[in-house]
Length: 209
Image (cartoon, rainbow, N blue to C red; front, top):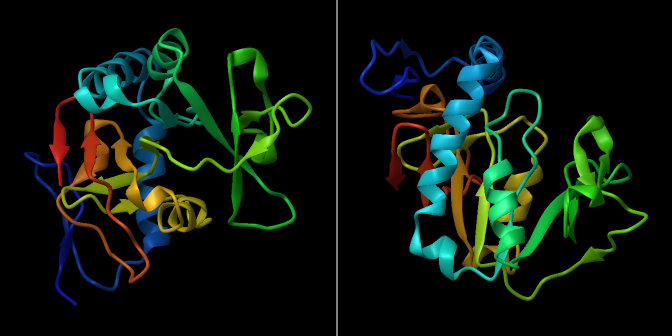
């Protein structure tokens, strides 16, 4: 396997051999994300979200699948507030404790519909938000520990989004990755089941893959 680079574009990116595993890469990117000061995280998250808000695809989308940023992830607060104000249908994922690696979706109308779920991640409150199976989702915002410039992602390792993105009706949705600029790299290891996103929005740029 050829060497793969994982450093930020434009920086002195390190070249790692094909023997490096995804678990080690996850540790490196988690450490980088954890070292980001809170005020920089807020500012960078805002700029990254603004790239999506400026898109025609966002303005025209009626149903969007978002996530609630936590544990250092790029925040989605602007996207959520914009979607609610524009009366879009906002779907959020909810992990299923009985089936690891799988999640269901629920419609969320405000932040008051959220409650700590599996792994203490804010999720749709099961007492107020019933699971839904949408016929169509126009746009999906996808989190990750890293993305490469081809659109492939390095997730947390649970396989939740891997399964979601290859199932119906999400294969026809516009999937956009959201990340800090240091999480966007030239190339990542790819498995046969990985599906690239159509674009990656960071605080520095919007990349169409």
